[in-house]
Length: 145
Length: 489
Image 1 (cartoon, helix red, strand yellow):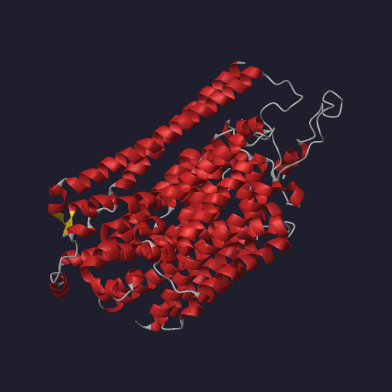
Image 2 (spheres, rainbow over the protein chains, first blue to last red):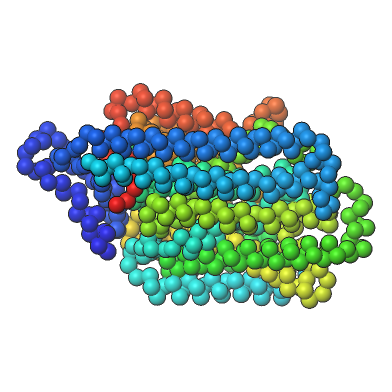
């Protein structure tokens, strides 16, 4: 339960009570806490909390990490969908695939029934590697600071 | 079919699930254990559990039935169910794990700093969960009626009672073990009969071939060339995006230790699902050759249960039938219990104060309502009704999750407006579709598969309302997004 203790301790950010930010309204916790949830997910701000030394470059790195992860996800999704569309068009338009019979079943049926799973798996494995690379790059940048 | 085969295999699965559930109880003590298994579940265990939970009545019985009924069009269901996990991996898995929230309402509330958003999300989660449980209970009713000859309601009631008891006793730690066990049971229960049948058929049983030769089981119109473009695209939108918003799927990712483990788990799930879905497809193809009469009799969903007994003579056929029945029951039990756990989590946190006792009361509430609906309605194709739940989820929770994770401009008003728009439109199409289509037949496909237009409408509403919301994005948005996307130390 050390995790929980740490999480619930964090919202008391130093600097909130010492008058440096008088205009701010009282901090309101906005997770399940208000509903009396146990072991609630509190704000555990790994990024600089307000009042702390908010380094501008760190925020830039985070934004660029988010952008590169989003781009990667979209590229992978579009790639999967495009490959699927091409695959289906080939199945529908090449008459030989429907005429060829394997184990009593037209080849086009078998390809549609079993052919797309390897594609999904390949995209998934490639994505996981690339996403980890993006994170490693981000880590290297923040360690250099 | 000898009813004792049905009784024995159903009893065996129920007993095994309950035993593993109670074995888990010994290590499930704190409230945190109850909710998310203390986030210490290993990727392989976790992936098996996710697979176990995800493979529902629709996958186990419905897919084969649909391939039998409508040919290669039915193969798009398992493709979509699997590719949905790809989308989950690409856009949701790691950030959601890092958010540190337990449920979707927790996530939206933390992201948008609004209790109104939480209330809308909670309501949607509960509605989606209830409607997803209904086809599971209907599948159980079908299985019990076909295999034991008992009245159909007995199956629904049995599943509901077992699930409520196990969830109340153990929470999610024991559920994880039960689910993982049930995945491998389901895989075995389809794979072994499928392989045995293929061997027997390849060996050439004269009587069977003669029956098959009477008509073409694979007409080109039902093949890939006869593709209905709008319906297929819309179904894919529903299945690919609907997976992102399923409450029982998301709660599983909180049990991974960190974001990287969540991604690894998702890839394993993809592999497990790919392996599993080969077998319903095999059953469907075999059914088109050897059991076309089931399609005409409106019994397509029973194909998986009937085929082994028809094609394999003697005690071997009886054993394989028992195995298939056990697998089917594992499917109803595991999906229902996964849904009940996540629904109970939401209901108890929002209404009952989040205590262990509240969780237990919520588990009963989460089971009784869909049971009543299942008893009052008749199943109209298991895969189809689950597909509609996916369409509803894709139009409501999915856009808010995606934009909440990736777009800092999302506001609470935008999220509520989008969820209401998507929810109302897709509910109108699903429930009022029959009446509207009778009045204007041309729009029937758009009502029967609404996701292709309801999802873009929901996204557009969210973006427009968020942009015009003068209060702007919540103050903590940058810190929250940083938390979602930066790797753990």
